Length: 558
Ligand code: ATP
Ligand code: MG
Image (cartoon, rainbow, N blue to C red; front, side, top):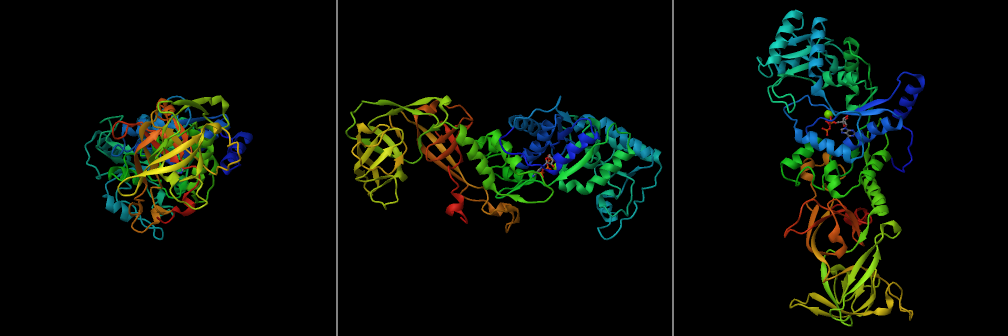
């Protein structure tokens, strides 16, 4: 899938051993998102691991929505998740699956546990349930409802199911061991009453299985061989194994845990991302500053660079924080290879070539990519009136300023050598126009008489360029660990994370761009055409990333 080497990891080792020993005949994994938010880069990792391992070992990977909580779930999220998984380039086995499809089976298994004396309907209040649970150092106490007859529990569960019981009044609990050192085994809740409408099953159910009761059994129903999840579920594994042991399930999945992906300058929690959206700190789930897959896509990342990144982060059982620089490296690496080059002037300053014939425009040619001849060439209109970037001109400058200085020469990228001869200033003394001359003998080659031209700048022809908006993004948070920052992640937002530049001038060939197209704007970075138009109905280009890592070089601590 990517060129990156595939270092071995403990999951690969386990799967290889399982196949060699014959413990499993075929590898089956799944990606099981809850549709209560958009996928983020942590999910991309889980997607990479599950789909990647299945593909590598000739197995299959399911996409299953873990839709067991109607309070927070929505079809908008289902649709976005499907879009994101497809965009990442993965294909799941068969139809999309839903935990809600298994509600009848899970309910039947709950009744089975009651009949076996392994579950009971409990009427402790949520608060008392917590108190009776005990702590890590103290055992819990048995619920007074623990020994009620199975027939009574079955009847009550039915009343819960059809909606006769208020939320919070009753739960169905497993009957395991209130003194178990592992708190997850202290009679965990299997079902709770919820009267909200479910986005798929509507009002058919008034009870919903807990995550713990649903997850392992869903894997068993689907014949998942390796249930891969993150480390926070390690302590739940004994409970999952208990269910599998005590239920007539068709298969016995085994769970393996790995450390979740944490990324510097980033929060990866759906709850927090949702808060950023709902409180208006960002434009939406797909804001290009968001670490959501939809945000990263709008920002201009390629699926290949995201897959490459998650692969490079490896799989381990120890928690760590991956440097955002690694993601940025993967993005640049991929875009450099494929993004067509173009020129766009972000802060336009007028430049007039006085010895170029008025009205005598010229059509120069330039390669779309320096090493990809297959991408062909583009027409680059040239003329008497040009735009250059304000930052590329100085009336006076130190020697290390390798751009245009009054009285000196510079090369226009893909075109001629010019000399700045004079300037026009406004009343405030601000330069508003540079008056220049060009040397017609220097197209694509250095001056013949041995003059040294130290710099190259980009430009566009004023007659052929079109206006656009450019959005420059910076890290959304100031600190590497926003979750640990004083005042929490919201107090750590970077006020300069978005800079909008209007009246930018794009070269003519960019007019053909379609939404999602990615370019390298020469000397400025990698950009992607946004789905939405900017002020004045002009195209918007998002900067995916700069050409070099400027953050380390002095942008820090801002
Ligand atoms: P969040 O913590 O953001 O709420 P979640 O784990 O509750 O995420 P799910 O929809 O349950 O979200 O996640 C689907 C799958 O993605 C799970 O298997 C989960 O373990 C995995 N996953 C979520 N976050 C990460 C992460 N940061 N790194 C690796 N895998 C992750
Ligand atoms: Mg979860």
